[in-house]
Length: 252
Image (cartoon, rainbow, N blue to C red; front, side, top):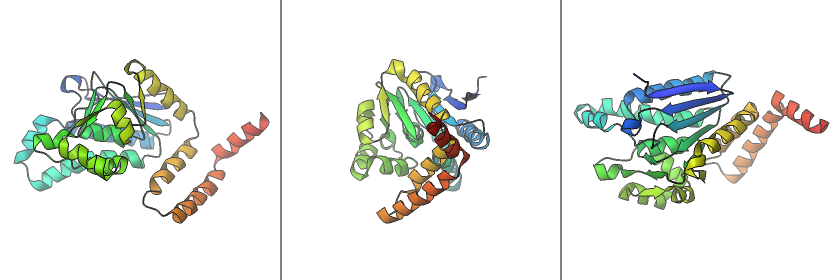
């Protein structure tokens, strides 16, 4: 059988494909573990410079596998907490990964699928994409996605989305801060590849330091942020990438 998650490395880009199109790429426990493995490869393999996550078929990801979710009603609280945390750790792992992660969002990205798409550093959506958190309509709680959503969309918009379960179109999602760009559906793969190639050709150390600085600024005061930026600035000047890039520029 075809694995539910495919991963391939080419020209510094680790492409990860959710591969259950008949199930709208619903996240099973097996898929979650395979995603962890792929992200570990991205972290440890020096050949990987950028990660690109997409879904096979018409939809990016419909969220948790409903068959597994229903079966979980008979498990203990501790067992269910461990399973939920395993998915949440995917979001955390993406944020901590010192390499940029791009998601290509086509069709529906719902619940945990919206969480996965928006956990990525640069979510790019096709014009026909839909993002939402309909857990409340299924008698469930949008728990694992709440931390991400509140940071991206703010208090009132986030509450609106999780309390009503309404689904946003691609442009609405961009305005709400859930995706970085919206492109025509037919251009989604090409646009995502171009962005990934551009990132793969950039300085790995500069990207890593920039990503780390960006997320570490969260919650810091203005003066503290300036001091942190000065420290990162100083560190970056000592990297080989910086020296080589400046030398090339001066030779032009």
